Image (cartoon, rainbow, N blue to C red; front, side, top):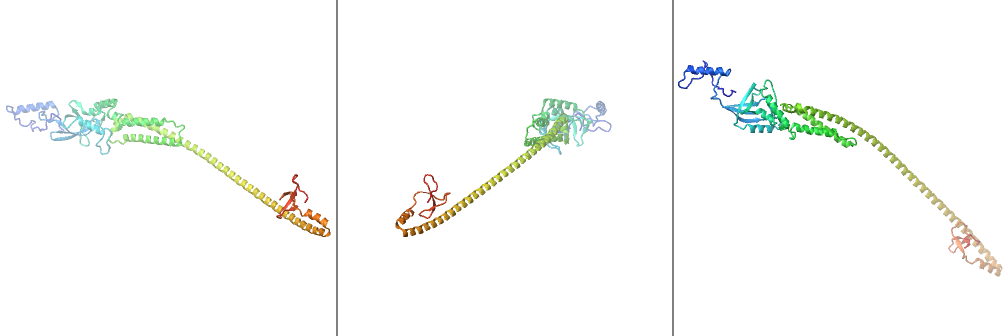
Length: 411
């Protein structure tokens, strides 16, 4: 690109400009003026400020790249010594505050804005873009991007011309906590580090003395998640092909992230030890309870068995008592039947003897008959412990007893 104030018209072969059309000026005089002009500008080969065209902004590409037009020539310009969050990088996601940086530059440099370009040692990069400081009047746009917290100072040798100005603006933005340095903006690295730091503090200071196994395992899961967040933050710095995150935050936040990550690693190890101890305690407790359960079951089985044996014993005794009672009753019935048989025999014998006495004498027979044929009307005992000595009208044996003493009497 030809600097402002320099004409692109070639010199004539004899060192003079094209033929002067101005009346009254000879060729020698014009040549002298041209040679004097060349001596003044040193290495500049052509000078004609009257025909230099202004440089204007055609469009903003992203937060640190613009297209400018001079005449019919469109040039892509990468702002030198400043790096804004990526929005167009082919291998990068859209970075935090990247769209904001683009809008900031669009507001600062609307289409058609006249700018000046100032170059350093290397004028282009490997992509063919011009590397320049962009001035809006006397304002260095490169630095204004950093001052708004939407870019950081970067230096790639041999181009360092605007680094100090951009770095000073970045320091000012960092101190003011604006843009990418604002911890109140959720996506910024400071905000993520602040959240991560608070999480680390909460997890590493937790009182786990009386925590249950579930609580310990839940706590460990939170530590693992926080450690993964630390890994993500570190990976963002390590995998950032554009280098923006490392340039913006690496020096300040990387040590803190690593320190918190180490604290989480220690906390995770301690929590795992607590989990192992709690698991062992629960195992011992479970074994104790199992032993108690088995002992209780054994005692219950013994009780049930003892009750069964007692029931069987009582049943045997009941059956034995019934058997003895049945034998006793059978013996009584047999004895009663024997005595009844004896009584019948006696009765039969008495009847025979009475008949004989009656035939021998009426007085004595009448006396005997009156005594033997009368019915017994006294007290009786059926089935008692005394032997039967009489039979009632229904043929049942009984024992005659004294109504007062309740003892057997003679029949």
